[in-house]
Every structure is written in structure tokens, then in C-alpha cells.
Image (cartoon, rainbow, N blue to C red; front, side, top):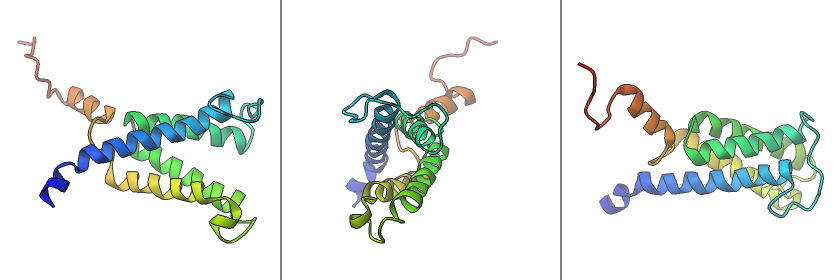
Length: 143
């Protein structure tokens, strides 16, 4: 078990990067019509909820991918997916397999997991906090 525990932060970081990338790809597909988007038209800027959902997917996914404001970004992404599930999918049918809401439900819970467990290693937040606190390994030029 200790061997598995030693790799926890690294595996969490890879998990965060992959989830962030996949989510950002969904948003990029909707906003920019790339990555296999079937519809050639992007949602109109600011239109509710399509444009906002795509913007959250792209922006939030990118922030989670980079580990920048990870917990806040993941909380917003989780909420967006909960909204998508209950407003778009659940009225169609009760079960996710029937209403095509499996991905929204899974993303909702995955992002909630990231909120509570944090970004793991290799997050820009940790690099920025080190540089702000002065924990640099470079010698100080101040006298």
C-alpha cells in the first residue's frame, strides 16, 4: 500500500490533466467547430445555455488541465454538468442510460472529486504559490 500511496499525487495530476483536456476539447468543439464537431455553427456569443456551457467546458477544462485555480474551476465545471444533467437530460427519462446523460453525470462527479482532492502534482497553482512565498531555490539578489 505504501508504494501505491507514494504515487497518489502523480496519478491525481495525470487524472486532472486528462480530464481537463477532454473537457476543454468538448468546449473547443462547440465554440470553434473543431475536433469532430458535426454542426458547423457555434452557439451565438452569450446565448443561454449553449454558449455559456461551451465556455465553461473550454475555460474550466483548460484551467483544470493547467492546475490553475483548480478547485474553483472544478467546482464550476461540476455544477455546470449537474445543471446539464438535471435540466437537459433528466427530463427525457429517469436513468442516465435512457436519457443520454451518462457523460454529464460522470463529469459532474469527477470534477467534484477534484474539488475535494485538489490538483495533485504539476499544478501551476503550486508553482505560483512557491514563487509568491519566496521559496525559490535561486539565491536572492536582495541585500
